[in-house]
Length: 379
Image 1: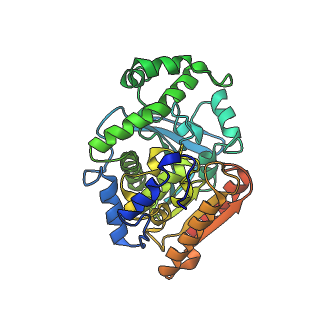
Image 2 (image 1 turned 45 degrees about the horizontal axis):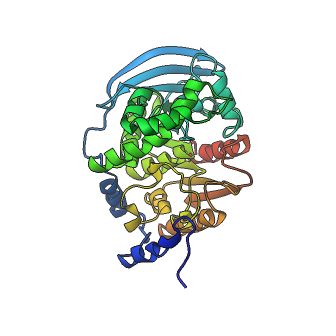
Image 3 (image 1 turned 90 degrees about the vertical axis):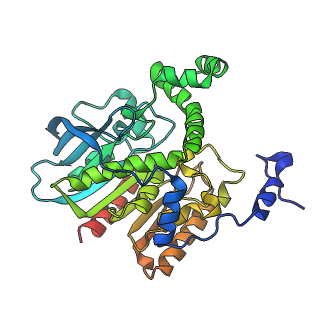
């Protein structure tokens, strides 16, 4: 009897038909060949990756952190805004850290979800952080640990977001009318809730444009993250030999791609974004398009991307009751990562940590990640 997929119903045999066209999720071994294949698959590469017209907009110091608000151009669209955070009164080059904000279906803000600037966090941001981050701006906490931390907005979020009016016009009046009439979350300001709701629909449109422009959402986001890392590495207060990246959920997605594509990363932490593609079949498919680079399933699986620079130190934190993934998918991904690092003759360079509970990067997990980073980047 053929497999049955609830999501596909009478088209369940589509899966076996696809497999007959060629293998799905083949093993893509760590190394330059996989890195090159990924870069070609994602597109939006082979161009200058230096941020343009960098400007320091303001500076401040509070709670043991010295901060700068920085902006630059990636060459298209509005300017990127970022927070640069480091220990107050720091001297000498410090390890660098790119803190990558999540997706969370919350595109109105980007960097503010994980980093505090000079002003107190808005109530909507404080409320948001209670769920995934234990109420803390973890980028500031990392700075106090002794890092130069850069948290920037990326394509579709915060300063890099599309205007609400443009999104509605793109989708057309029937869809726009449905969005205007949709029930709202009373805990969020109406402007923000309507924006976030529209942006979920709009991401599908953006992904279509990416496809006909020869790239993917993963490719565009990874390009902008590489520019941000290049800025961080160019600073005299950063040790370019000891620079990492970290992110939860969509931020973990970005961390995997950045690590695979930029040799300047010395260590990576991926939180709440690791699974096999096989385990997503008939499960939660509401993930961002960043998780589904066009055509990659013919070349490798998602864990292969995270491992393609093995033996680079890698920490992956898994939430066992994460509604976005199955436990089987997470454990199979963990085993695949172990195999990749064993094949690179460095099995201890990969660490997988499993935690009970839902999709999150809570204080316990932050403490463990910070400890791992200190052991990795300070020794």
